[in-house]
Structure formats: C-alpha cells, structure tokens
Amino acid sequence: MRAEETGAGVGAGEGTEARVAPRNIVCRYRFMNTPYAATEPTRAQVDALSGLTVLEFGAPWCGICSAAQPAIEEALASHPGLRHLKIHDGPGQPLGRSFRVKLWPTLIFLRDGHELERLVRPRDSRTIAEALQRQSADA
Image: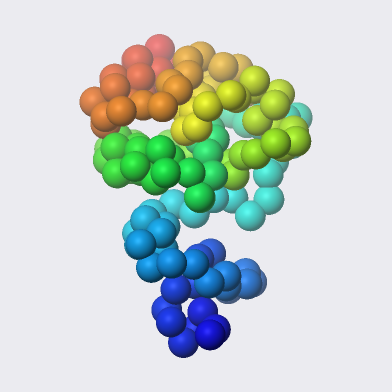
C-alpha cells in the first residue's frame, strides 16, 4: 500500500519521498511546526553566524525529541526574530559531533557563533524561556 493511499507518509513534502509508517508514529511528526533542516550547515557556517542563534539537535524518529517539541515551540514563539536551526543529528553527523552532542534533544544557544549555554533534554517551556531571557539580556 502506498503512503498516499493511507495518509501515513512520514517526511512527505515537496522534494521528499514518503515512507509508510504506523499511524501512531506519524501523528507525532505531522504536527511539528519546524521541520529538520534538509541539509546540515558546516561548523564554519555556524561559527560565522551573527547574532543570537539556537541550534536544536535531534531526530524526527526520537520519541523524547517529539515529546519536547511543544515546549520548544512555545518558548521560541515569543522570540519570532530568533534564528532557530533544527538539525537532524545522528551517528557520524559532523556538526553534532563538533558540538559534542550526546543526547537529544540538545539546544545550544550561540551568539556570533560562540556557545553561550546548552540545554540537554529540556522538560518544559519555562526552562527554555529562561535560557532565552538570559541570552537576550546579555545582548
């Protein structure tokens, strides 16, 4: 059965190929507002970014990452101009290794390419909002 027939495509979209998955898994992914980046930036590109940036490392199949999405999106919603890069991490991915990411999701707060703070497996939007407030206050 094709993904179009079941409505169970994961990652379906323009320029991507749909994969068939059980409906209970698809529901988690379908409602995430921010998709993972199609291509990972290099460390040099990240280091060259100006201003405040949040790197979010995770994977679309990671249950903990999916569970954290509402809190992450709620905290980021009050900072519409903030650069948020959602990186699909995994074994051998150079950007995640260069930041020594070991658990997902990991949020790394950067200013002008320099790490200021990181949150590993944040549990609520308040924790993320407080980190964003600290970084915004230091500007």
